Length: 64
Image 1 (cartoon, rainbow, N blue to C red):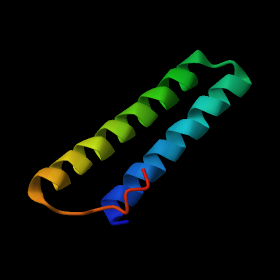
Image 2 (cartoon, rainbow, N blue to C red):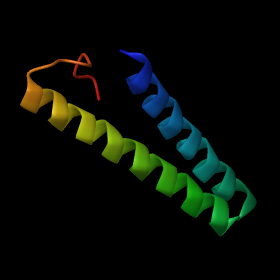
Image 3 (spheres, rainbow, N blue to C red):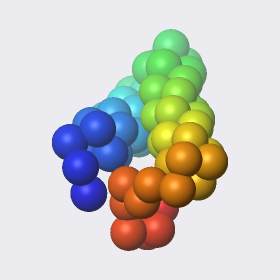
């Protein structure tokens, strides 16, 4: 896993934590922000995989 992939995974985990904190506190804003951060990270990671597939590179082990 390279540094970009690690950043994306950390962003996704941060979003999950924020969403869960929002659920625990009843904050719909935190829930929405958490879901947004997770979706944003997943989209960036998917874009990276598509780019790598088109260029023939391999930036991840395929674990997510």
